[in-house]
Length: 402
Image 1 (spheres, rainbow, N blue to C red):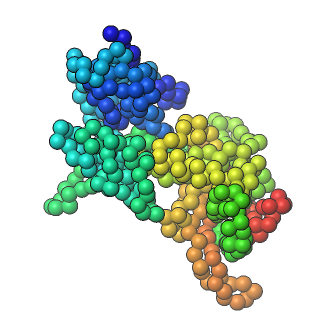
Image 2: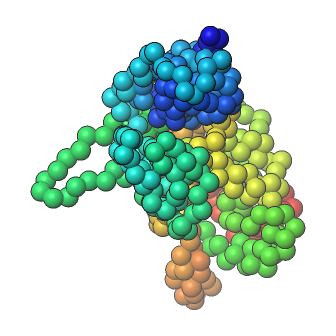
């Protein structure tokens, strides 16, 4: 008998512990090297735990939902056993479910149906607008696994809301523990509210010039670069132009010091099945519109599939949140600490405006910039937002860097 240990991957220094999701194997199952055995959820990403060698699972020491730390022993594999070997040790009982913010799934049994999905798979299916019955499960007893869900075709263009199903008969209540990501987001938002002197300034921008430019070149752009020309790349370029002019908007506070950053790492708020994540678009000032669009598309895809790494979510000097994709008309975004400012973008709608004494209809977007009033005065905040507005209303300036 040759026993190999399966352990928790090394977590980053800022992460003390993590939570196990659902095991994809049971004691007695044969596995091949690099097969994914289970997911480990941190407050930022989900890390896959692969099999370190081929063999048979002889022992599972930590159950679904258990709290674990770096290098903690999870299971053992006998590299010389066959799948028919008896397993002397029973599987560990599951801990209290900590990922219950995702749609609940029945525990698999010997009579499980093929329309049962694991918790991780349920989240991905909900994001794609699919039911478990729409996907053929390859897990034991026909269970739909995370890999099955990731490979399933999208049924609806817009993501379905992820919610815990409730029986609405009578007056039911259901207590659902937060996921680690949701708890971390809550902690950071509360920290931002408590530690920053947040103020928000608003302005409106006429998007006609950007829309006309996009309509004129979008087909050629997609053919040339293999990605659609969206609006976020223009917002990123406009933000960078303003940050260059008013560097305090790109700064951060460290105790009683102000740190001015000589680079522009822009956080792009992205919705994922696990909650809001903010991957970082690094050196955004050095990227073309095509580079930005490709990066944002990649962020969105990897966020949906749970493939963003810790390095994608670390750092950032300024953030952009686009509530407009969900139809938001106006909001006051909360600063992502330790940053000092964030731009909120909203839905572009045709609205009556006055130009040269005449009422005309124009596509208007309301911009909101929240900032830390401890280091950013109203003058810099207002002028910074005006600079973004001017860049968007004359997008040729962005291309000429003037």
